[in-house]
Amino acid sequence: MKKLFEISSEEKQRILEMHESATKRNYLSEQTAQQKVPLPGQDILTQIGKSFNFTDVLAKWRTQNQGISGNYYWFSKHNTETSGALRSASVLSLYTFQPYGTLYPFFSLSYDSRDKKWGIQKFSLGNPNPQNLAPDVLKEVIINNPTKNDYQPLSIQIDKTLYEQFIKSYVTNNPDSSISRSFKTPKEKLVPTKDTNQAQVDTIKKSPVYLALNTSSTPSTPTTPPAR
Image 1 (cartoon, one colour):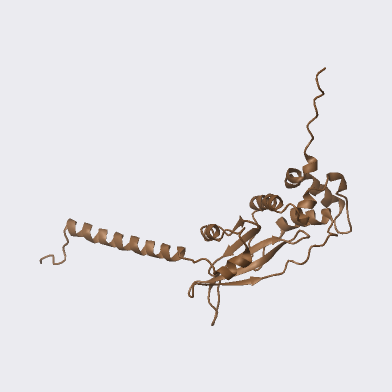
Image 2 (cartoon, rainbow, N blue to C red):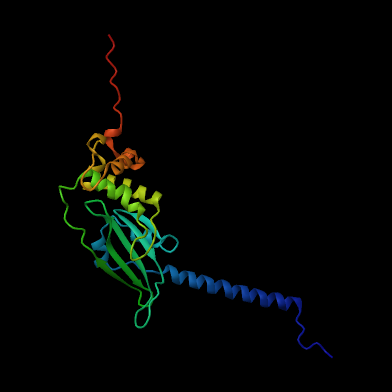
């Protein structure tokens, strides 16, 4: 019996190349579709402020679940499960410091991939309180924030190394904030309060980020007496 379906080696190679070419085109098409997330409208960009580099964050938010931009520490989560009439969306939460030291969500943005539209929700940070005591503020920044189990509603654990970089950046960019003033408080003025005990004060004083940012911890350079 004749072999009716025998294929030459040249034909096999041609079919294989066609398959590989189609696969690459499909992969690149899917990759391009993922990258085409537009910037929000000017109304949203204006609210967030110029210190936040949205273009840079969009280049990172699918491979990183958190990062730093300007005065914000951001978290991202994608393809959140929904049901019924609700649609899946990517979520980008922008956290910053409350005056008393808590890391708090200031903006929550959602991107609907089907409509290609951004939505935004803004939260109040409250009014600065001149009575915020440095030990209490530093307890929140140095001890409490990094030890939270997760950041709601995204349930993401904070990267402590990245968070320490954020503290340093925030203090540098906001020298008049209560956070910056607290870090500049000398060691001898860090004493227990009704909300912060001695063990917590000792932890703050030994913290590398406090020692790095506390200007009073830098030894002064001795003055060389003039030659006679």
